[in-house]
Length: 71
Image (cartoon, rainbow, N blue to C red; front, side, top):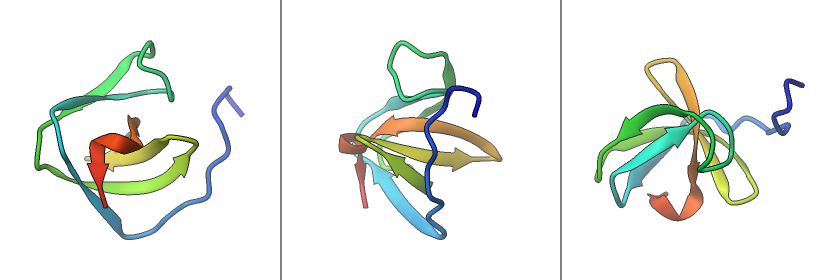
């Protein structure tokens, strides 16, 4: 659907970012940026696809590499 992978929803899981990073609209660093995050920011994890977490901040969803978050 829309070229994005199907992901099972994870409810109420949070992670802490271990670095400043961008969040991407698709699971690729070549994708457009959805929003930026700061080191030590707590962020809601909605799911995972391969080595990317799907995260949500202020009702905006994006992808972050799994090695950038501590869960």
